[in-house]
Length: 183
Image (cartoon, rainbow, N blue to C red; front, side, top):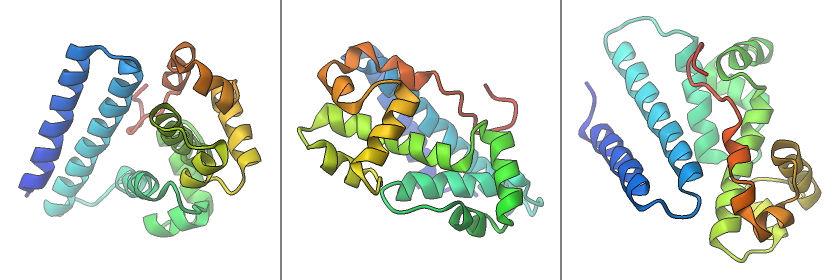
């Protein structure tokens, strides 16, 4: 049975997407994309819960959803693929293969992309130093943060912060899918 909190969360996400569409402020396109991704993740979580309640044997997606949720909640902590595999009850090798087939990127690329998305939010909303942003987003060193930022956005965090409007659409180019076949 789906709880009231899940329904409220979905309604709140839909309201936020509508509100962002109405206002069309700076970064609206990127914010809406992130909100839609969050909505999809919440719907997947609900579907997985409904399947478990109906005593339907879970599929690999239920395991991947657990990993995606863990990354969303713990992106600022050290995350190892072995930890994600353990959470999902799979061997690391099998987890890597299944994750890649469903999300279209390696588990660590997904973790780092999630961190970069959070870093972009911090850079946009605060005047924190690059060292502080890197630390708050889970990067062990600023150089690792810079390297990953450049890998995903093809620009340094400092350049992005100066004029993020020119570069925000680059994050939208990544084809992360929550379910096999979604692109």
